Length: 216
Image (cartoon, rainbow, N blue to C red; front, side, top):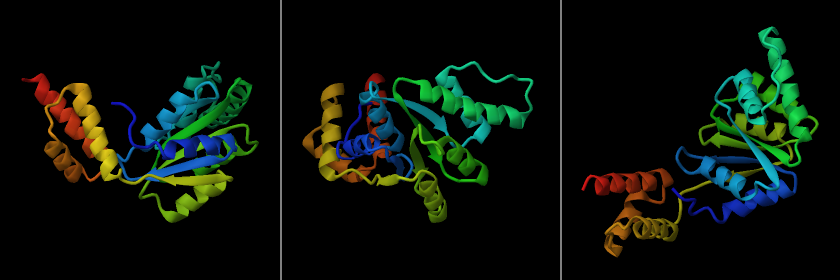
């Protein structure tokens, strides 16, 4: 499904990266946090290299995911777990700094911060060759959010909220035209009221209509 409704937030992400500022994107589940960042990666791919990692995983697995994207020669499997982890994170910084584009590490699904996770962020950020976008769940405790921003200083927060009624109606009109739905303006108004600008609900309505149309 096409990117829609975050045209105001998208320039904010690009401007922050241009100013070498890190970003924390926060909002409730399904509000479009990851979609927004992926769109930024899509349209700025010639300037920055985005590396995505699921930060709900252990720091060791996060490093493995990042190294998979960087396609390096991995550390020896003969290393102990801790030695492998230490070498992996140093290799991330080394390989990323050699890339022609400045690398942006996207830490997705941040719901809880441990000392080990914060330590990994500090390590990767310490010499500041990398930029970071942290995608935090809305229920992340205030103290954790404070420590996250402190680790990523200088940083700024982009809070995603529900789309406006006009944006929501525009989304349903776009989908109706694209997929040949027989939605009237009355139908679109009803859908706008029902979903209240919540992107996950909006997508669910469209997917159900696609399934219904497919089964006709």
